[in-house]
Image (tube, rainbow, N blue to C red; front, side, top):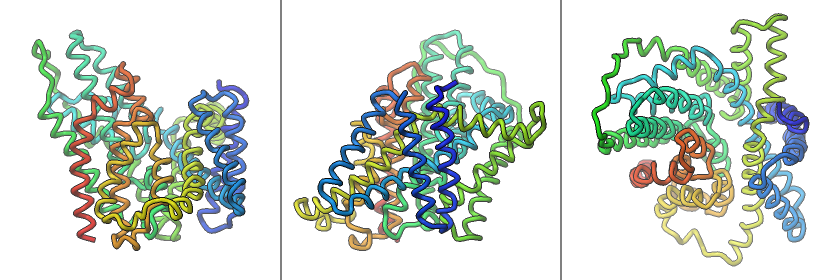
Amino acid sequence: MPPISARIGGILTALALLATIPHEYGAGQGFAIVAAMLLVGALALFSLTAPPSRLAFVAVGLALVAWAAATRPDWVDATLTALTRGAFIIALFTALSALRSAAIGSQAILDCGRFLARQPPGRRYLALTVGGHLFGLILLYGSISLLGSLAAESTAQEADGDLRRHRLRRMLVAIQRGFASTICWSPMALSMAVTIPVVQGASWPQAVGFCLVSSALMIGIGWLLDTLFRPHLSAPPPPRAVETDSWLLRLRPLLVLLAIVVGSTLALHLATGVAVTGAVMTVVPLIAMAWILILPPLPGGRAATLGARIGQFATRDMAGYRGEVILLFMAGFIGSLGSTLLVPVMQAHGPDLSAIPPLLILAALVWIIPLTGQIGMNPILAVSLLVPLLPAPAALGIHPTAMVVAITGGWAISGNTSPFTASVLLVGKLGGVDARQAGTRWNGLYALATGAALTLWVLTAAALL
């Protein structure tokens, strides 16, 4: 069990989600402030057992507050805005974690993952990258943990060490790239939750069609590179049993869950006008609770089972995510407050960014985000900090959707290559290599190819819009 401080922090994090939801429906700024204060308390408790790498983000945040207090008369309002920004990100993360907690232990979901991992070499990559994409929509980077563990379980039976190493690498890379491609478009991805508010005039319904093309490009390029650059083995692989199970039968639980989540989210968004992220925060925890209720109950009945699982989610699962909560909250906080402090400095002393050709800015966004990821800048921090420094899309004469496509595309590349992201760290751990190798060596050529393709697509989208 996590320490008592982390368990209390987990409860406060779950309560912050409940406070954020009314704010998404226009109930007033007071709810957002309550959520922010709950998370400040949670971060204070989480920090008692956090590693120095996470405490460094807290230290930077406190330094920014001191800078704001010394230089800005409106520093309290700016700090509260940054706190509510961080709270919003954690509320979305908590909602999605609830569904991940309910789904990841499901036998039907595990069977679906094993079915994908059992596919023969000719179609294994495509099966796992599409599976990683579908699982990633529901489980976030928990999809890498689940499918990656099943891939390691599958390859552990190989007697040939060379074959086992190559097969595991290709399977993990397929899963990772499939997950990262969700970053381009998913309404449940943190990339959309962060990007849409900072790009003036942008909306998910307007951007999703163009962003889906980005996702398809990333999946297609990954499959093409895997086909072209297959490893040369010292001996032919042993024959494998033919997979006879039906794809529709095995994938049905996942597809049904996706249809319920996406359909309910869009229905609520259209019926109430609430932002897509607000609809996700509302719908996803309810689906997680419904899932728990339809599973065989523990002794004491379904209500007692639901209560026990909710308590376990707050005190064990969210407490276990305390490192991620600190990182995500502080990335949003630092980006928001940092951009507030830097905008007047840039206006007074920085270069005139409006003089830069707009298409060059769009192309640069595809590359800057993954490049900053190589030096430890989380994409949430990079986008929250850098995008507000740019002129608004209207001032540049470009459509906001084109900027969203550029940002989310760059964010997806960072998710494949940055050794500081959870996805790359997980892949490295499962593959038995360091994160730098899992990121840049395993995905370096892929990053260059997708970066070039996404740059061309962004410029094309800008011309079409």
